[in-house]
Amino acid sequence: MRRLTVTTYVVDDNGDPAWFGPDDEVPDWAAAQIDDPAAWDEPDSETSDGGPESLYKSWRKPRLEEEIANRNSGRDDEDLIVVAGPGNKPDLIAALEDDDERGDEPVAPEQD
Image (cartoon, rainbow, N blue to C red; front, side):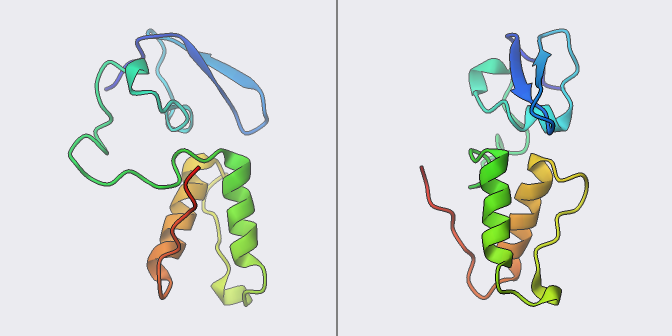
């Protein structure tokens, strides 16, 4: 299990700061927001094996929500992107990636 090497904070779904440090167990929703590799004692097992990293990982939650709303605009009900779970950042990313996979052509996000 990865551990933080520093104390840092992330913002929860309510917009409140949540602090985590080396002695804390970091929940998945918070770990998804801590994208500085130097903050962790070891690489992320999901991307350290050479597998692709999500193109959406660097996006903040409001941008992910906006992208889903834009894609859903004008779609029939059966084609709408439905976010599973409570709608946290990993849920939004998964919904966008699923939409990319089921589309005729994957929609690549613009890079900042």
